[in-house]
Image (cartoon, rainbow, N blue to C red; front, side):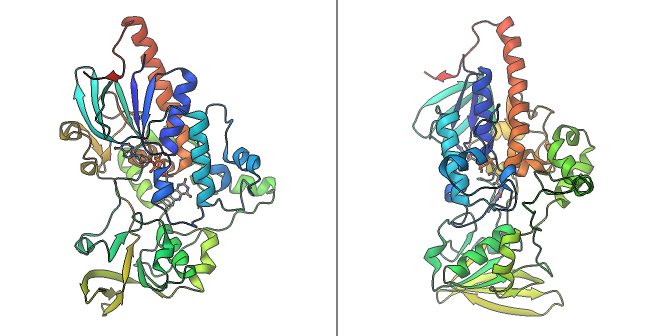
Length: 412
Ligand SMILES: Cc1cc2nc3c(=O)[nH]c(=O)nc-3n(C[C@H](O)[C@H](O)[C@H](O)COP(=O)(O)OP(=O)(O)OC[C@H]3O[C@@H](n4cnc5c(N)ncnc54)[C@H](O)[C@@H]3O)c2cc1C
């Protein structure tokens, strides 16, 4: 019997599917595998997360990034050697082939409530019912461009997730807006691809992560600042390793921590490439932009109030992601209206279930509930184990009560 539909085939969806498989939980999973990584991050990017924190979760930790790299002779270290985007993408695709062969590369175009739970429609025209739905849609629907820039045509101004190939901007003047890791990666990669780049950020100073040594650390160093999937330190250790305990904190404290933890910063490996090669306009806010004679004119205001205008052929808005449930337009407005929220994101139970029974959220949409780890691949292990445990339990209960319960299947 199948009872669950997983929507999304990034690190979270694939991890959950691998765990369901091993527990015999019937499911179908939909989505283009590793799509965010294949098509929505700049080619040549290096991951900010260390190797050991970039695994997709399978129950026996059989198929780690380290093992994948060893099998192909790709240079790898738990810390100290940045993971290349193309390595991580290939790892995700190999994970899918080996651990989740049943993946269906189809888009879910609508989800509605039905008498059997949920009715899902696919872009192939097929319909199916499912008792539970796990939304593992990641960042894909939540790219954020400030209101005052949204009117600029996409040919001139685009969110950093809209292009993958930086080479097409060779010889062009490009302004990158933002001071976080996407902005810094884009700026460095564009400059290296032969574009003329300028970085504009609100911050007075850019921040970069420190490099973790690949060397073995002393016991004292490890006690003082334990290494974790979210970086070193005891706070990070709590956020990385105890999402269930984080869930028990008061709502206001959780929101405050998620807002303040791991703010905009680049990887250590991008520092020199940006600081020594990319012109920067820091402490500047973008007030607006207009296209005139095929150039984007960007109006800026400095912290002291001084105004100026700069011009470019293209603007990359590396302005991040904001979870906004209204943007999940494939989920019916009836379902969306029934979701209890926490800071604009779904308020989740300790099993990742929303206030709409049988509808689960994982990944960035679950960060206000379980903490900052949900924004990273590292959180997929917790999410997969938690959702699997909950559904295995409910399945065994239902199997006792309703032996031939409704299966996921084609709707007539
Ligand atoms: C530039 C950049 C760099 C990053 N670097 C790191 C890093 O170094 N380390 C790290 O851990 N994290 C990093 N992240 C965060 C990263 O996005 C998350 O860790 C990761 O993607 C979470 O996995 P996910 O499965 O939740 O989401 P995603 O990887 O975004 O996967 C979501 C999937 O859902 C699918 N989907 C969406 N809607 C539908 C639908 N209607 N039907 C079917 N499928 C659908 C998408 O196609 C996609 O495949 C980075 C993010 C960005 C933007």
